Length: 174
Image 1 (cartoon, rainbow, N blue to C red):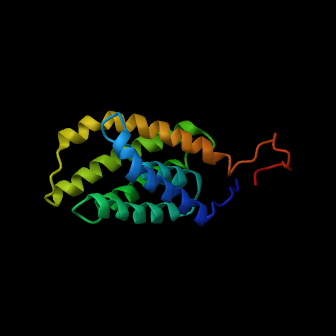
Image 2 (cartoon, one colour):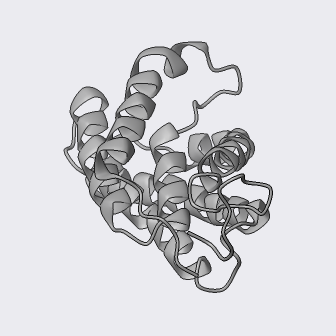
């Protein structure tokens, strides 16, 4: 199938909004312990739906911005976010991109990779990183990332797939 390409500026705007909400609002009001990473959810959804590599680039750039704001090290969040795109790239070849459930499974795998890669990088560098805190926050992160990725998938799948009920449908997919 031929899917429409996402505009780089639109993807950058989505990543910027996710970064802005995550760094200003979400960390202060999230009730489930560890706040979800909206950048992770956006990176997984864009890697799942679009074949371009800009999800990797934007995940790395905005991950560096998160590291500059919150970490004593430069790069653990950026590297972890880039690693999170791998399950989406692998699973997108095996499943139908229109289905939300495989995208949620990719988000769950990406969450596990993100959490443990971030912990491993911080622990290896000598920063204070406790595995028990990481494991304790994991259920809330898995749940919140699954819900957010499902909602993002529902929102962005409409931009790549034209359905028969569309008034400009002329057969096939865009």
